[in-house]
Amino acid sequence: MNHWLIKSEPASYSWDDLVRDGGTEWDGVRNPTARINLRAMAVGDLAFFYRSVTEPAVVGIVRVSRTAQPDPRDDKWVSVRVEPVRPLAPVTLKTIKADPALAAMELLRQSRLSVAPVRPEEWTHLKGLAEAG
Image (cartoon, rainbow, N blue to C red):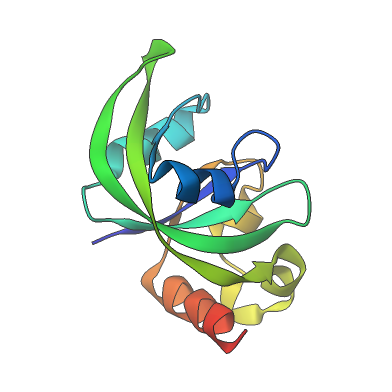
């Protein structure tokens, strides 16, 4: 199983929207590297749901429930289906930036990338920060 981080602006689609809907098509991604990452996702992979722009933070965990297929908005791109697993106590971008164990995260290295891989040790550490609350 691989781990990921997916970003969304709360004004566009929030964690609460995802919970209300019970899942969504993760579409509209228009970055070549993010497209590669979407294509690499497998059913059952887990991802952090990252709230961007307003109070940026990891706020939940989602599960990939369908692999990549052509994006319904533009078939030059791809989308996956995700469903909520559980909310997390927010881990802010400020906290992530200040933690040496997370210094190599793609979130920090490629800050505009909306779908990024998360290394196993980063996943465990960040999840631990959320659980510590």
